[in-house]
Image (cartoon, rainbow, N blue to C red; front, side, top):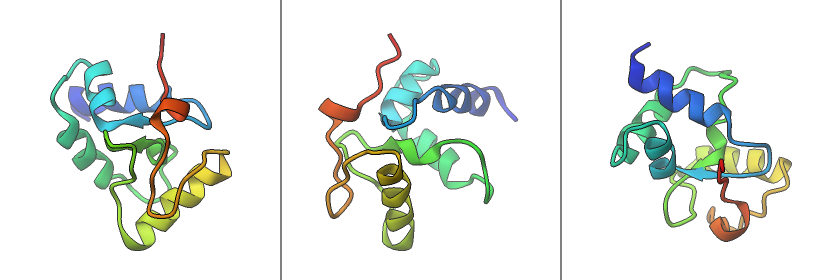
Length: 101
């Protein structure tokens, strides 16, 4: 695994149950500001059954970026953690955004 992936996966592992972070936040916290799209690409290629809490990462508008059955799966995982997800995948960043400080 390259250094970029190791860093972003380490940050994602820290997102607490019931909270979310954005692709951009993850990139910045991992030391790669401006690499939000690359974070998304890395998550897209995760193997089935991964223990990484990928479902806690959303876009900067507070929405789930996935569509179709993937959207439904991410919504279900977040709701199981107590996160209020509106129809269409909108989440209140003000209420659920993780801040590591």
